[in-house]
Image 1 (spheres, rainbow, N blue to C red):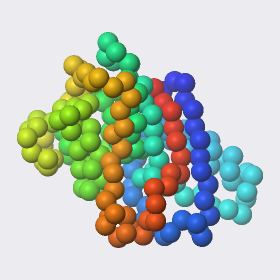
Image 2: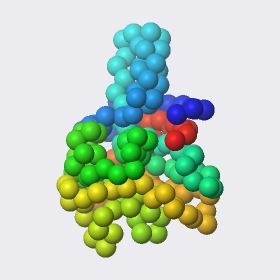
Image 3: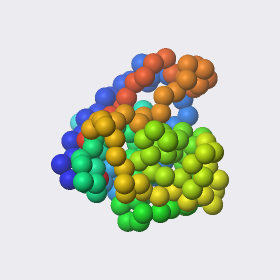
Image 4: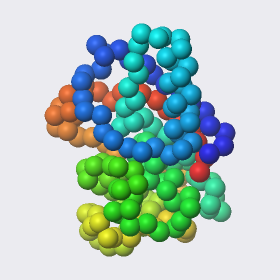
Length: 180
């Protein structure tokens, strides 16, 4: 990832309802930036603790493998998935899930938008079923085309899901601009 721009929103716990923090092993490039900021923040505010909520972050990726450049806006989980494809064109769902330590729900939500028949940034083995089997292969769509140069593929959380999670609105802990 080159040309990385990073911004963070810090909220106190009084402004952010308690919620379980989903697990995700973010890519090395994002980990380095996160660790540098955490170190800076702890040096500046030694009595405060920082908790990263990657499920609320967004990332703008710039494609570099197609004849036309696209800007794809995704969440941190989707970014982590897409970064796995920097070294290979095909992965099985179970391998993605194991390498990123994502829950079944998070992997499904993330892959649904990436494999959506209208966008097809990634292609799933069985394109007709909106489910993901552990041994199903996911591959990069090397022939990806779209009329729009900028695509927003961030999964939209339903009002019922937001209420059950204790979330009052769409808040973001950070934005990353990155190039893949």
